[in-house]
Structure formats: structure tokens, C-alpha cells
Amino acid sequence: MARAGQVGGTATADRPTLPAPTSRGGHSTQTATVPQEARQGGAAPRKVAVVTGAGSGIGRAVAHALIAAHWTVVLAGRRAEALAETSRLAGPVDAGGPAILTVPTDVTRPDQVDALFAAARERFGRVDLLFNNAGTFGRPAPLEELAYEDWRAVVDVNLTGSFLCAQAAFRAMKAQDPQGGRIINNGSVSAHAPRPHSIAYTATKHAMTGLTKSLSLDGRPYGIACGQIDIGNAATEMTGRMQTGILQANGELAVEPVMDAADVARTVVHMAALPLAANVQFATVMATNMPYIGRG
Ligand SMILES: NC(=O)c1ccc[n+]([C@@H]2O[C@H](COP(=O)([O-])OP(=O)(O)OC[C@H]3O[C@@H](n4cnc5c(N)ncnc54)[C@H](OP(=O)(O)O)[C@@H]3O)[C@@H](O)[C@H]2O)c1
Image 1 (spheres, rainbow, N blue to C red):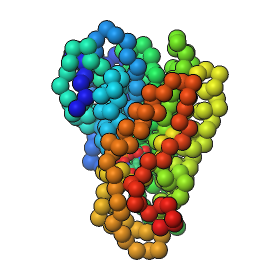
Image 2 (cartoon, rainbow, N blue to C red):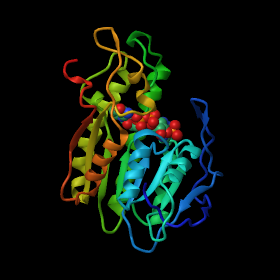
Image 3 (tube, helix red, strand yellow):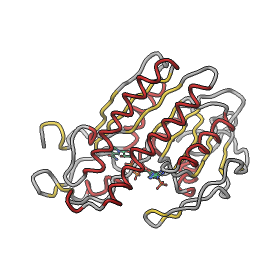
Image 4 (cartoon, rainbow, N blue to C red):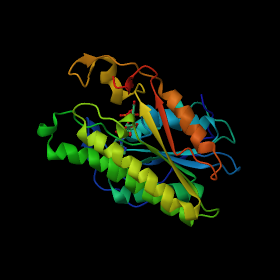
């Protein structure tokens, strides 16, 4: 697995105090009093990536792939223990290797997002990459039965959270010297075609395409590139139902093929490694035989 830099001790949380926690799926979020874990690398300047949703699934796989490619990585997500596990799973530390910083963050909270990017800049001086990945599928429900709160919860994470992180990254990339950086938004094949009973997820993933296009245009004067990866059926917690049977457009339940999240991560690292003069604007990485192409 990846090699990270020597452990540099636990950083004190000198960023603004995070607001009171909320909870999701039985997991408590962390407060500002939870120390950030930092594994500090050597003297050589390394490119700095912020990965949201880094405590599981695709975010964890991308974080590990970036670390293996010698990026310094800031891990963000609500569950501090999941972020620490991502850091631990990155493997044994080598002197001079890349650094890892974990910053518990709820991306729906503007103050916490600001604190995340402040921590990244304070510790590493700049932000070269945002992998804008945190997301939720929400509760599948027939459209006419979807509660306002369920709609809102998905919009808050997938759209507003992505906007807040992109805006904070954009501000940092515009202000830093050398100027510029890259934002990679995690869309979905749901940015192109819906699953049944997924209006909030589908609408927010279509909206992600709008974020990507606006960021790409508005980033031109500042050397800020933005691309989007649209994933189909990577094996993660979010896609567990695809391996047991998920509702199809014809009303049947079907088990669907899945792929390894590490195969997604390789594509993200490729997109991230390009010079800022080049950009993968949109990439689709999907399980080869999943129902999508061919209308089924
Ligand atoms: N797996 C696929 O096939 C697939 C396909 C298309 C798109 N995607 C996209 O890939 C991304 C990652 O999904 P995944 O499959 O890896 O599922 P996952 O394991 O459930 O990951 C979702 C991540 O988002 C984080 N998150 C959720 N709400 C958050 C919040 N308010 N603040 C900060 N972080 C939050 C979660 O961490 P905490 O709970 O710790 O906050 C979790 O680490 C999502 O945007 C998803 O839409 C996945």
C-alpha cells in the first residue's frame, strides 16, 4: 500500500471551533475539540489534495491512490474514526513520504468547510487539488412520497456541500502563489440517467455537471481546472443493494455487476496528475456490464 511520511505527532485544533455535532446512521460527528491527526512528511514540497468523504468507499480509495502517487492528502468527512482508519490503512510510514492530515468536517456547514481549507493552508501552505466526493444517495422512495426533509438532506450534501467545498478550494487556488489548482467533482452516471425512486440523487448529480461547467469557465483566468468523474457501480457501502438486488426501470429487482473502487481511483489520480494546461473535462468509469448503455 501507500507509503506516508513519518508521524509528526498530533496537531492541536487551532482552527475555529466547529459547531455542535449532528448524527447520521448511528455515527456521531466530531467537534473541534477532537484533535486533528497529522502525519508529517519530509521537506520536499508535495502537491496537496483535499479529499472529502475520505472515510470510506471511493474517497478512501482515492486518498490511498493519491498517497501512493506521493501527494500530501487532507482527509475530510464527518466521522473522525473513519478518517483515522483511512490514514492507518495507508500503510507504514516512511521518512520523507507524503503527509496525511485528517480534519473532521461536515460539508453542509460553511464554517466547517472554511475551517477545513484553513487547516490545509495553514499546515501545507496551499491546495492543489480538491476531490469533491462527499455524497449521499438518500432514502429511495416513490417521488410522490419523498419527504421534504429527505429531499433537503440530499441537496444539502450533494449540491450545497459540493458548492461550499468548491468555493473554498477556488478561493485558496486563486489566492495562492503559484496560482491555480484543480477541482475534480464526483458526479455519477446518475448525472445522465436516473434510477427509479432517486429524484433527489439524480437531480443533484445533474446539478453537479452545472457546478463543473461553471467552475471550469470561472476558473480560466486563475489557472483553475475543473473536471468531473461519473462513476457507475463501484463496490462501496452506497452500492450494497446492487449486489443483493436493486429496483430496475421495468419494476424488477436485479443484481448488478460492480467494479472495484480502486479502478476509479486510478482514473482520478490520472486526472489529478495532468498539468493545469490540460484537463479531463468529463470521464465515465463504470462496471463494464452494468445496465446503463443500451437502455437496460
Ligand atoms: N459507488 C458508486 O458506484 C458511485 C457511483 C456514482 C457516484 N458515486 C459517488 O461517489 C461518492 C462517494 O460515494 P461512495 O460510493 O464511496 O459511498 P460511501 O462509502 O457511502 O461514501 C460517502 C462518503 O461521503 C461522506 N459524507 C456524507 N455526508 C457528508 C457530510 N455531510 N459531510 C462530509 N462528508 C459526508 C461520508 O462520510 P461521513 O459519513 O464520515 O461523513 C462517506 O465517506 C458520492 O458522491 C457518490 O454519489 C458513487
